[in-house]
Image (cartoon, rainbow over all chains, first blue to last red; front, side, top):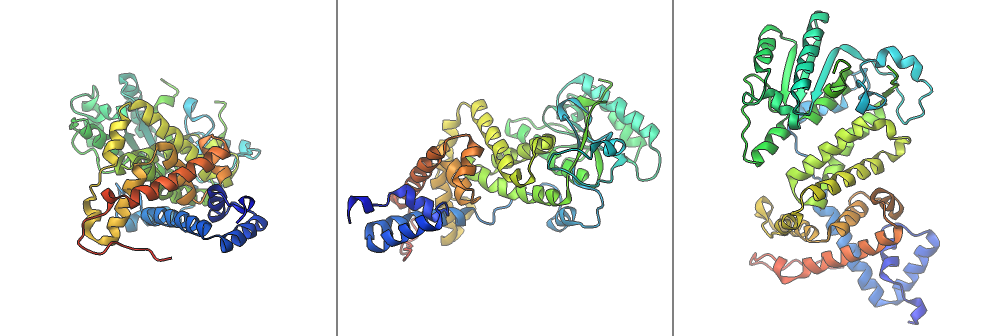
Length: 245
Length: 182
């Protein structure tokens, strides 16, 4: 074989990765037919690619929350009229989704990839806190109390989910507002506090076993729960963005 | 309040659901640690949800999510300056539950070999081989030239095979070593 016929490894890799046009594919195939060395190199690359694919195939992210069947129904349920996520512009500076239903008509010119007809439940809120900040703790509880006062109809509900530093809100050893939380859970059926399972796990990995206030749920992760709620049309609010703060 | 709401379509919802496992596979290939991979994916999905407005083309969803995953992975490495130690740990030949049968041992060996690759090589090979990304997409996701993608991929496969064929990684099963016949 002449030197000009030599097919280098990167061309062979591009061939097995489907990166070549038909003409170049034919060139490679022709060269490989004549060149045992190229055939061997091609085989080894194919082997590496197949081993790689097979060794990571069928892996699934760990489930922290629901049994598979329930989990599946959450994702696949066609009866849910609301869209998955309803987000206001600029999460970092605004209340996510809270005003969405009123402002939908202003949004028809939105050129983002996201366009749908969501059905937002303003009386179902998931409140997310991720920072250890007593001001935010108080703001969150004030918001919850206000919500509970204003939403007394059947079906209204507020879920409060804490992860990362926000877990301090729900720890008996760090929460400055634990008595208010306990009283809220005692007096209202429609407020649920959830301490992120991943956050707790991370603390345990650091050697800290956080004592979580009794009756607060600890078997869900923040992301699973938030996505599930948004999918069901709930309103998402990050505590950082509560206007009163 | 001068915010414009953004709404996500049902197909996009389904794709986000699908994204989790795909991201997890790649994250695991990158970091080699199941818990860390799960954390990275959750962080990525959270970032994706929060910043979904930045996604201008729905068809770019996965590439966009992988860019976020890459950022989170880089951030993690910067925060954990002892990641060399982590890599060392990942290279362990401890197969754990995967050692229960011979086929799964191969899977464990490949994963271990992947963990022994340089981080940059791991990233490229997993995006190409697990996700089927084009070289061009990988270049965009990782923000590197396409020539770098090709050279890293080449080195990754070469090193992967070299690790797999090294005697240290061959299991002592008392059986004939597996031969893959062309």
